[in-house]
Figure 1 (tube, helix red, strand yellow):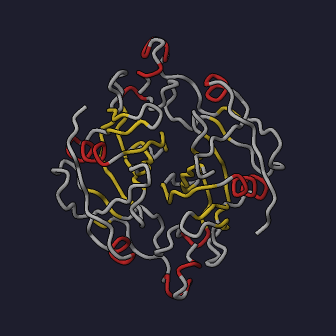
Figure 2: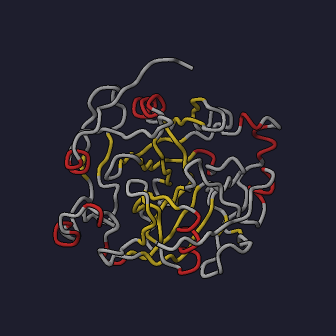
Length: 159
Length: 159
């Protein structure tokens, strides 16, 4: 990993942050912003990930998605093991600039490390009494690839 | 605000969390899960918000979206001031169960407190040298309502 420092503009007033042209991402206490990743052409939400300043800088510079793994505490390029990279067609930032939306072309047809197209392959039933055990329903959950073949048994390589 | 306690199943093994039917949301150190909110019919990503266990319980029970405001540190029902409530058509959970996707019908045609349909009304240019001041481009940024008329000057009422 490189150790270069990437910095972005500091946040100004609420008016500047919400109505201005200056990109001033708000990193949380861990130095991360939340990224929603959607398929650029169908709009389907594929995954949620996080970026630190370096991952954000790499993504802006290369047009391919880089993230920061909270579980592994390191920078990772999406698809670095699987080859399933994400080409970023458009990046958007939200009103208070603490979340990003990436519209991507997903190589391999699957964003999820379980082999599915989207990480959101199970539905939570609604209008249930909360606190009881809620049973999830699988939807669009067919696997586009076999994780064991792509990643082997090394969970650290799941990208 | 009520003070009732809502609890969900604890997370089991990775296999159980990723491939199982038990809903076991993983709340972060602040007791929150990230929620991506998309328009149920167009798929457009409208906003990102957070839920604590109580907000999640209220949403599941009522089928209308409740969140936890990090800035105000309180439970809030989306639209409680503006009337722009969100009817949840479908809720999904991701592979490691630390993020939710809500597909909603958005009342008033605008999810953003700035009056826009989506909070993601500005694009971040790509393939720029990172670290320089990045200039955002407004896209689909017309206002569906006037925030001053809907909320007055009380920022605490922006929902």
